[in-house]
Amino acid sequence: MRRFIEFVVRYKNYIALCTLVVMSFSFMSFGALSQLGGFRAVVVGSIGWIQSLFAWVPNPVALKSENTALRELNLQLSIESSRFRQSMVENATLRKMLELQPLTTEKLIAADIVGKTTTELRNYATINKGTEDGIKEGMTCITDAGLVGNIVGASPHFAVVQLLLNRDTRVAAKVYRTRVDGIVHWQGETTLSLKDVPRTFDVKQGDLIITSSYSAKYPPNIVVGTVRRVDNEPNSLFQNVVIESAVNFATLEQVFVLDRLANEERAALEGEVTTKIK
Amino acid sequence: MSPLADRPAYMSNPAMRIIAYAVTALTLSVVHVVFLRFISVSSVTPDLLLILTVWISLVEGQFAGTLAGFTSGLLFDVASADVLGTNALAKTIAGFVAGYFFREGMAMQIIGSYRFLLIITLSGFLHNIVYFFFYIQPMQVSFLTFFLTYGVATTLYTTVAAVFPMLFVNRRQEW
Image (cartoon, rainbow over all chains, first blue to last red; front, top):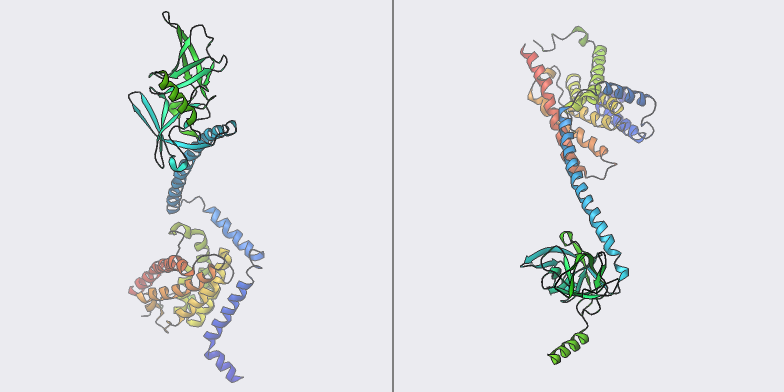
């Protein structure tokens, strides 16, 4: 017994250490049981009460870091908000364009306009799809609103569209209501013109103009625009029909390319006959 | 003249000293939980109870220091709503290690010198290794990364805070 007491006295520091370590581990293992119950809950509640008494004291360091964090958050939210608004506009446009899909039997290739060029009343747009996407020269570009133009050049990843607002563009069209034919072209104004319509033919303001099946270049029945007014020139047998384009070229961002080319047999025959006549 | 010679008479009474330590520990726990947010740097605060534990180890010896570490750690666990036993274990070990530097009658000389800071740093490192080992158990983070970020920072901040009692004792010795 005496030797035991001597042992304990001699190694009391180590015995105390071991005992307290074991006790600490015991507390840890019972941690879940003693989480916030009874006495501990009272202590934590009291501490919380004291903390609330001093909650009004500002903490400059915490305020500064909170301020920085809020500024960053504000910036992120502004960027997100801007993206969200842009997405909403894009979403609305694309939804309208998707509605076009069931109305046509041809395959549609969606493309974004990545550039616009104007040279001497010749307006062109560059799209981000090219020969690798199936785009070929001669294909027609449209939107949900109507005719945009046709492809006049293509590289593997890009293509150039000759827009309707181009003085070289000629579109065989007709008045949807009365089936009166004419040629749509542009001469630099804000509107298009339907030429070669005799004065006696029935064309009225508000009439819808669509592409005609006479055109070898454009597919038929694509909306070109609506008649804004009809000008009757005194010394002419024809009337000048002023058309407002269905497509707003100023805000044009996305287009569909119709995967359809002019019928080669028809083009060859028409070319042959024209040469014979001449 | 011993630096402890001018201390209040009640301090020579062991029971009174224990009460004084207990009151100090209780006060420091509350101060730590309530007020240390004002001087926290990136969530890192000095461990005032560790400084008290090392102080007790250097003044009272290894046995008392180990007990003080356990008690103050447990007190802090209760006050801070931490997992019960983690601070108790870490501070027990810190108090035990600090007790190796106990020299009879030399306590105030040690505390009033840079050795006090070295002892705090050593004890702090061991304390934080043990504490953060258990602290990060429920988390999916690397112990080494966490310790090198928070453990080292806490140890250094505690060492900086220990400069104040060191200077206080150092000045009293000069008086």
